[in-house]
Image (tube, rainbow, N blue to C red; front, side):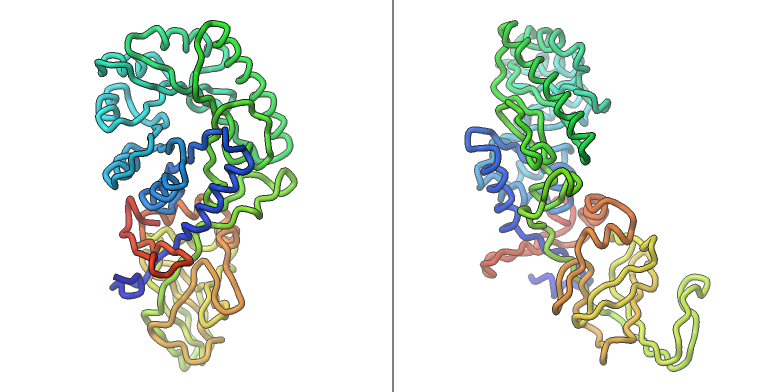
Length: 390
């Protein structure tokens, strides 16, 4: 089946060659001795968790980090055997289900640690999440040493990993991350002095990798960079070596209207069109994650030209095609990506909607088929929405 044969012609193209190149660039930057634990949370940042997990596993990822139980289960059911670390997103009562699938649970409270100890009959690995100042999830730094000692003393518990999260985007945030990183490394030294040696330690994600932070840990957990998204401002670091993994979102014209006289269209007649104007409709709307532009300047590409977006409804978007010679039902329209000599980037679309590019991706996530794009065309295949979708 080709995405172009779909009854509702709307699909995303995900470039796994770019994903793999980004992974290799991360490995080059951190060194081969550092474990890489790619973050594939939120349906792999909207790119399709199964396809992304398979590609990263083939690249040699030490483990895969998931935020949602459903994503982790989908990866396992696809036959991918790489370790899966689950971020904190579950109650202690759910621990037996996690362990049934062989997932590595994250512990951030004694209730969860005790639930793991009660659920297993042989030594079980767990990871401890430390809150280094983000104030979201994790054991507070001031209580971390005592907490890890209590967890390590539980029967059948092996503290395999300790990690934290230090996101930042600007120079001030970079200095904050350096300060928190020093505290995290002091924690690890204190644990060693207490006789607790942990094999996997991780404190930096994409921002830290990009800024080349001297983290002194055994692992990194990149997210944004894998998908070609910059987590920091250009004054902190350059993201250009990491190409976007979302190659395109494409659709096709399903309706064309030639307006012989001037009229007002859209909800409440808010869009006046002059006589002779041509409008068209494509099957993408808010149900697919496409939002109206807050700037009022959104466009799509048709025949290599930028065509203005007139209105977005639940399942359709109306376009002004007046500048297009003879638009025809079935013509390809590009929402994100290149056509002719022009390109609409994900960042551009995000700017029109006044959101972060990652918010655009997660809005699209799971709502349209994904075409896996390779430079070897014979390997291109289409995944259905949801766990494999965009």
